[in-house]
Length: 73
Image 1 (cartoon, one colour):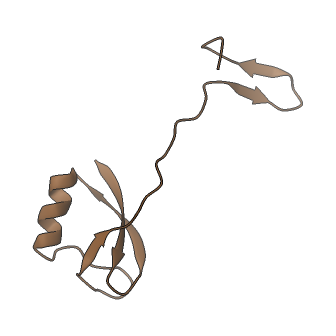
Image 2 (cartoon, helix red, strand yellow; image 1 turned 90 degrees about the vertical axis):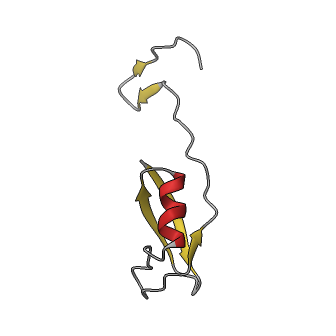
């Protein structure tokens, strides 16, 4: 499954899950995706920022507890 950030032709942004990129393309072409705010079916992918993974290092502030399974960052 993949989460896409979408935008309708009226400028409303929303997110939707799809099986894959081809699934999005097929639903888009057939007009099966609609904006939840206005119902517009002219929808395109919006620009998305990548989700970057967090470091494995965790520190409990004030408790002095460190969990660093990799040994280094």
